[in-house]
Amino acid sequence: MKKITDERLVLQNLNNIRIAYFIQTIGILGILGYDLATKGLDGMRENPLWFVFMITTVISVYLSMSITADHENNKNKPQRSLNISLIVLFLISTVIGFFVTRTDGFKIIDGVIMGGILFICGLIPIIYIYYLRKKRLDENNEE
Image (tube, rainbow, N blue to C red; front, side, top):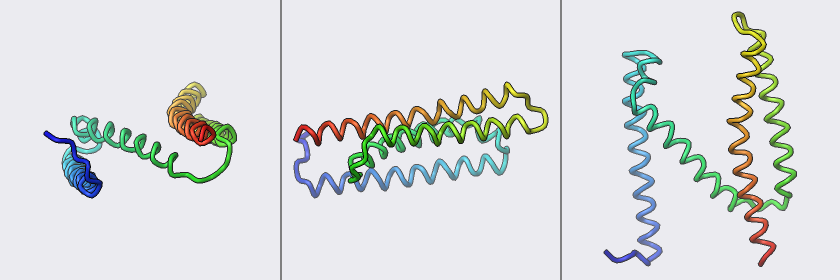
């Protein structure tokens, strides 16, 4: 099989993949919506399609982050953006952890655990986007 070198055909192929992904996502959401209506939230989350949908969504978001980082045209230093993102993430995690402790039936340890989980889950994409911005800045400085 020969590799496609015509840019128009490559673009058309990528558009076809995008359309197929969109239709597949609509189908998965339809099946999960049916499970939600008939079996409830727990029944929907027991469906293996839930796991496939979540993994696909996370991978799609990370791939979009790399394109977004390459498309940005701001001249801000990546370190400054990292610091601001970390401060905002810490504040959000702290506030949510505080509100969890104020909820009936939850203790301080529950708030710390929830805030910690949110902080770690937010830290991963923040560090990834920092890496992409730093790499792009280094590439631009070499040119």
